[in-house]
Length: 257
Image (cartoon, rainbow, N blue to C red; front, side, top):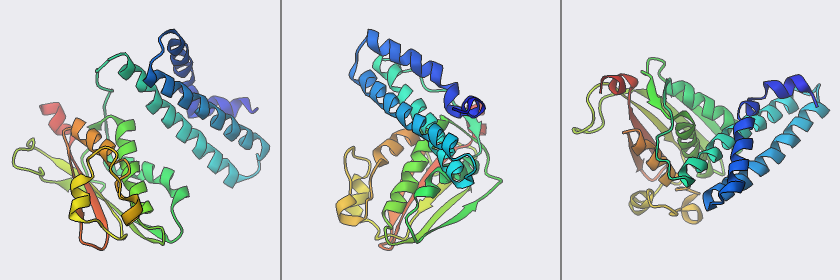
């Protein structure tokens, strides 16, 4: 296996930590740890196959790009799975947060999603580069945005437009923290949602997959993430598509609070 390529793989920064977590799991079994252990083992298999693909098709730029995408996704999934260990121990300390550009975060997430876009789905971006930074738990917010984008695509199996916008905005409610805020919206041109469906989106396990194009998957998780960041999630539909918008206080609010 190519040693240089393996050394540069983003997974490797997490490998020692993952090995330590596996050992810890043997000492103190817990349902969450057992689940994470199984997930990490499967990710290890996926990683190994991706690395073999890189070695066996060294002259194929397309194959290399796809394999690197798999390796990056494995690294991100391993980080998320590793968070089950603190939860299993009852450790409620919040994950570290850092200041990031929300437009850049959205663009990065779109890169993961792009290879799986249904045929006929066109992406339309309106990302304001002047959007102030936000202080977030990056893996959690990436996963939240991914869930919204994936849901939008699943609502358009026959094609349509995926519109993603990000811009500075005013506080979303009178009782919201003062100062600059930003809003990121994910909109599709699918069949839309009923008022009843929108009202139930935050309920764990609720889905409209069978009735209206796959809406609702992961929304409860998105809502938890947004609330943990002091933000607001809103859904709307005019019967010709649906839009989900996340409002977040900008980093200046956090630092002055």
